[in-house]
Amino acid sequence: MAMASVAALRLVVLLAAAVPLLPPPAASLAVTSTYVRPTARATLSVLHDGDGRTPQQVHISAVGSDKMRVTWITDDDAPATVEYGTVSGEYPFSAAGNTTTYSYVLYHSGNIHDVVIGPLKPSTTYFYRCSNDTSRELSFRTPPASLPFKFVVVGDLGQTGWTASTLRHVAADDYDMLLLPGDLSYADFYQPWWDTFGRLVEPLASARPWMVTEGNHEVERIPVIHPRPFTAYDARWRMPHDAGASPSGSNLYYSFDVAGGAVHVVMLGSYAGYAAGSAQHRWLRRDLAGVDRAKTAFVVALVHAPWYNSNRAHRGEGDAMRAAMEELLYGARVDAVFAGHVHAYERFARVYGGGEDACGPVHVTVGDGGNREGLATRYVDPQPAASAFREASFGHGRLEVVNATHALWTWRRNDDDEAVVADEVWITSLASNPACNKKDSISLY
Image (tube, rainbow, N blue to C red):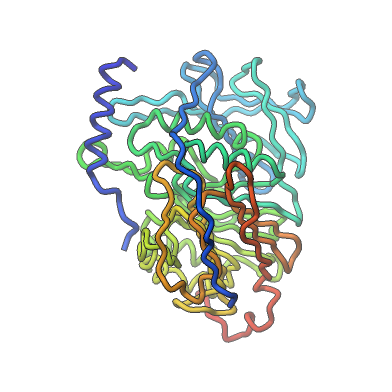
C-alpha cells in the first residue's frame, strides 16, 4: 500500500475512533487480591518474512467431531489447498477449499484461504502444508474423543508484550483447545493490525484449534463510510456455525461438542440480537433443548460482556443480555459461563437471578489476555458476597474436564513473566447433582 494511502487510512481510523462502538444491545469467602501488577508493555508488530505466495497467519478451528478448518493468507494468488498426513514430510491426503478477499475503506486484504480437512483421527498429530508451499511444514494435534479434555480460556488478547507473555504461558503447558470470548486483535479499524495479530498468534493457533466469538472490538462499523459490521472478523475467523446438530446460521454465535459429546460448548454473541424472539434467542433455545444431560456431562458458555461483574469498568453492559437469556442457561443447567470485556479477572460463585444459587453456573471473567488498553483496576467496594475472587492482572485460565462429574478451573496470573496459579476451584457437573435435576426445573420449551 502506498504511503499516501497508509496516511489516509490512518486519518480515517482516527476519525472512526471518535465514533462510539456498538454497545451490547439492549458461597465461598470473597477475596480481592492485593497483587500489584507490573507496568504496561508496548504494542508488537510481527512482520511477514516470506514472499507473496508464502502462507501466513495460519490458524485452525474444529468442524464437527473429526474435521478441521485451516485458514491462512497469502499476499499473492496461491491455491487454496492443504496437504496433510501423520508423518513429517509425507502428505498422502489433500483437500481444496475457497479463497476470498475483503476491502475496508482504503485497505484490501490478502487472499484468505479456507479449507476443511478430514476425517481425522482423535489425539493424533498431523503434519500439513498450505498452498503447495514446500518451505513451511506445520503440525497440529486433534482433540481427544473422550475425557479428560483440557481447555485454555482467555479473552481480550490484543498484541502487546503482555500478550506475548500470555501466549508463552499458554504454550508452556499442554492443552487440547483454546476458547476466546471476544476482542482478538484490537485492530480498531486499522486493518493491517489484523495481519500482525494473525502472525503473532500463528505458532499457537496453527497447532491447536482456536474457537472464538466476537467482542466489541470486532464490530468496526463506521457510519456512512463502512456501515457493515464484523467485516474483518467474519472474513478471517470463520467458525463452524453451519456444522453440527444445531447450525446457527451466523458466525457470531454457534455451538459444538468435544470429547465424544461429553462437553457441549455454546459461543454466544453479545453484539448480535439476543432479545426474546431474535434469531440468536430462538437458536439458543433449540440448541440447549437438544442437549441430553444424561450423555453430556458439562455444558459451558462463552459471551463477551459479562453478566456478573463487580469491576467498575463496563458495569451493567451485559445486564440486558442476561435478562433475555439467563433463564435458558439456568434451565439447561449450564455449568460455567466465561466472559471477557472487563480487563481483569473475576470468579463468581454459582449464581442466578442476581444472587447465589447452587444450581446456577459459575461465572468467570477472563478479559485479561494482554490488550493495549491496560487493566481495569477499580472494583466496587465492598466486594459482593457472590464474587469469590477478583484481581486486576493479565493472565489466562484453564478448564480441565477430568471426568463426568468434575472439572478443575485454574487462573494463572502473568507474574513478572512467570505463570503463577492465583485462583483454583473444582467445578462439579450440575448434571450429577440430583437436587438440580428435579422435574420442576425450568423448561426450555
